[in-house]
Image 1 (cartoon, rainbow, N blue to C red):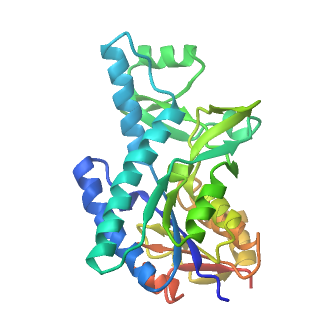
Image 2 (image 1 turned 60 degrees about the horizontal axis):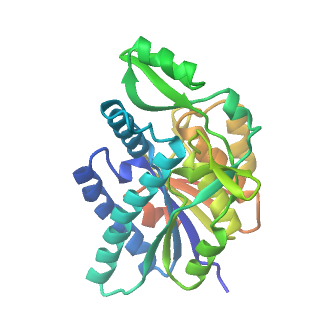
Length: 306
């Protein structure tokens, strides 16, 4: 029997930096997801949360400044908040689009925790810029707390680690819902990064790259395809669009340094990781507008083992 299970990773262009903008954009994403449902795919969705987690962190920090009874929210808590409100908008938009087309299919959001390695080298080399701009005095105060900051043109900003995902704690719940035919939204923003401390899970001051978690999620669910949707129709190398390539060709391009470490590298690297972790798998990187055509392998950057 053909494996119709796919993991769809929605990029930041599918959402927005304000509440009204997000509701408008998720309606477009819901149309694409519903079209995939109509083509009989069993769908698990994950998504970016870059602007949203920054907004939440900024708001909670400002709140703590205005009222001394409260403390700044840790990054793990901001990640959980972003999963909740993005999931709320997204699952309702998908539910509405499904019902408008006469389809009844439950949509669920799972707040998802992802284990990271406390010895991951990323903790020594933070790369993810987050939150509001600070002046020099505020930046020095952050450094005294043990946090990292970076100087930009408009001031200083907090910078956090981006470790790789090791395990997904809610994977059994995600699999059960997917097996029951539900659409599942999980591991938003790469998941809430946590570390094991005995029986307790402690939030880590980090943001996991969502493309790597999408690949981990697709692997653990034994999906046949990983569909990474971004703003572009395909990836490029030396200014030339990449179409159908093998995992070996993709690895060679990575080694030659053709991809931006902050944007395109995680996408192709995650695609290679997924494809090479099992048989008969395909990773597709394309735009939201061309998702249907990309799933038919007619456009986008398509990575396979051969």
